[in-house]
Length: 137
Ligand code: CMX
View 1: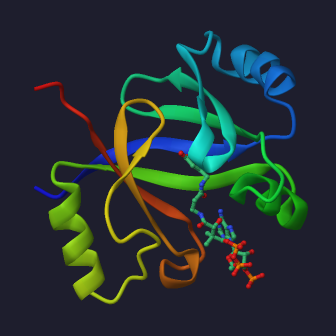
View 2: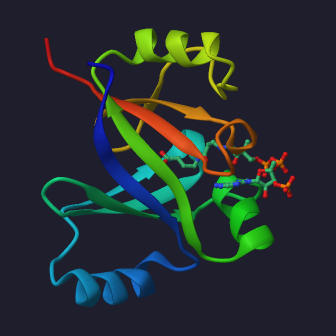
């Protein structure tokens, strides 16, 4: 098995505190985690829906991918993340199939994951993330 399921949907927001109020009301639950990812210049909150999660993303750095996205398109759906069981193997499969990978090697991401993004120009306009849980040895 390669792609297992939709792990989460990423939503770019202007103000995470404000959006947390909206999404807590919409989803009828509180976020289970707030986490900043320095390398990406973002802060996040995660909502657990059982089979899938919702990730809110706010930019914390000028020029970050989230800031650029909101400038161009406004708040809204930013990426679709698929859980994979072997990210290196899956990256190789997709690279060979002609998809444009945005990372040469898996990178550490939020929520204890190794991640890799695929350019939306090669995936029909959807920014796709592959993610694999980092397991403690
Ligand atoms: N979904 C769909 N299309 C997107 C997009 C997105 N999230 N972000 C940008 N695009 C589009 C742009 O609108 C642009 O389209 P047009 O040429 O039609 O205007 C096109 O992709 C290319 O844009 P670009 O200007 O060449 O490139 P950007 O500088 O906007 O970068 C991208 C786009 C995807 C390469 C960059 O955002 C990236 O590297 N993303 C991966 C990292 C990331 O998103 N990190 C934040 C989340 C981290 C996390 O969840 O942990």
